[in-house]
Amino acid sequence: MRRIDWRELYAANQETIQAALGTSNTTAVASPTALAGGSPTVRPRAGRPFTLPSGSHRPLIHVPPRLDPGSPAPLVCMLHGCTQDPATFAAATLMNDAAERHGFVVVYPGQDRGSNPQGCWNWFLPGHQQRGAGEPAAIARIVCDLIDAGPQCPIDPGRVFVAGLSSGGAMAATLAACYPDLFAAVAVHSGLPYRSATDVASAFDAMAGRNRGGEAHGREAHAAMGHYRRPVPSIVIHGSADRTVAPANAAQVLRQSMTANHLAAPQSCHHDVARPTGSWRSHVDGGHAYTRSQWINERGTLMHELLEIDGLGHAWSGGAPGGSYTDPRGPSATEAICTFFSLTTAKANPD
Image (tube, rainbow, N blue to C red; front, side, top):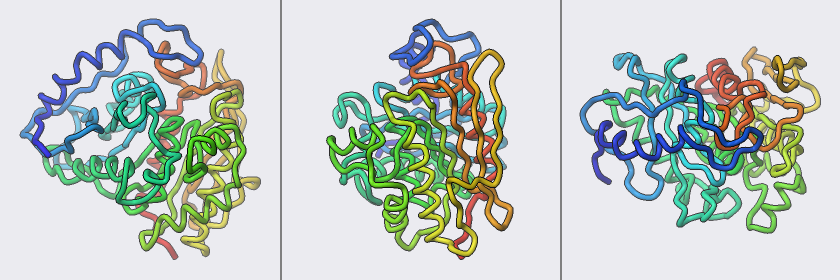
């Protein structure tokens, strides 16, 4: 462990950030063009040094300068997909811009290419599917260090959330199952259920939509929670034209979450994927049509949301034009996630 000043962290990543803002990695829909002038940067708040984890998952952190240091802010942990890194993911999703508008801190852990040459989180290996081990433990350490940073980066521990795309979405589902005491809610964009695979072969089966089903996965997620078990609200976002992670995975992620929540709180959480509380069709002007469905529990709390986007491929919906795996024609996944997190209870208590 070593102490890193915000200014040092910022300076050390400037070259990477600027590259992400000026170029694109693989794009799912848009051609590789320079991002618009309003694209986000990773700006630190000046202050005394605090402790961050050393090692291969060193993150990028965005602290809006106008945050009130006397009022603890929410924290959103963002997990990139394969071939991405924290800087390209921050630029692609426009989450830093959302943090400026809504007043929260964002942290982007990065996968080490030595652990996965494509930069994917190893969601499909048993060594990274449990509390206190592997990548889930490394990510949780980063989040806990930020919470413990005190006045240098005041975080509300009751409003800590995790979101991810693709392999990052699958790892977000893993963190929700393994650390329900840490993460108040989860967003899975174009991802897969927790423990839907245990090796490379089964990972490809799961990505193709061939898996055991959400209820079996739900029991595994509930078991992974251990004595920390509690209902974890979830929002799932997926495109109907995703050829990398089959759209069938969206319902599987949702069913897993609903099953695990029912086992944790049977009196208040008994939802059915086929029977949302409400469902609406809409469209983006000049862009994609989509269906938004929500499930509300008996206490009136929004517990689950599903955003199904017509014609969206394997890309962050409504992301920056020319960004890494983005489709700007979709509804904004970033705004949908922020709204969902703001509407869910910070810490739901099991019955």
